Length: 125
Image 1 (cartoon, rainbow, N blue to C red):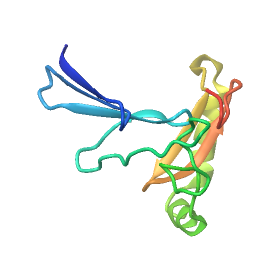
Image 2 (image 1 turned 90 degrees about the horizontal axis):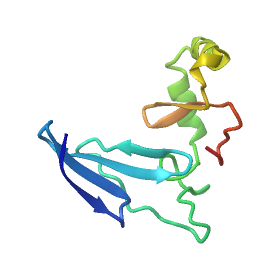
Image 3 (image 1 turned 120 degrees about the vertical axis):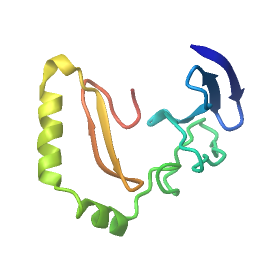
């Protein structure tokens, strides 16, 4: 049950208040990432939109852009059993009744695994 909502077109966010009491906020990231809930105290930065209208940037680090620090990636991946993760994700994508199209695994603010299926890609939903 939604009691009120507010749209922030500059930040591409919607704040809503409902029966749960505390307001919740979700912000649009990009075509690639869609939108996500905002954790209080971790407010989004104003998106920088290039002429094509895409908010992604090859020169900025995730989640604003597509850039990843290789050292940080290696450090975070070293804390995860990547073989086990890969096996679980492959099993998920191979199960046709799940209709898996895309999956990002994010740990400590780093995309550590990315998989696409059913014609989806980094640039297409």
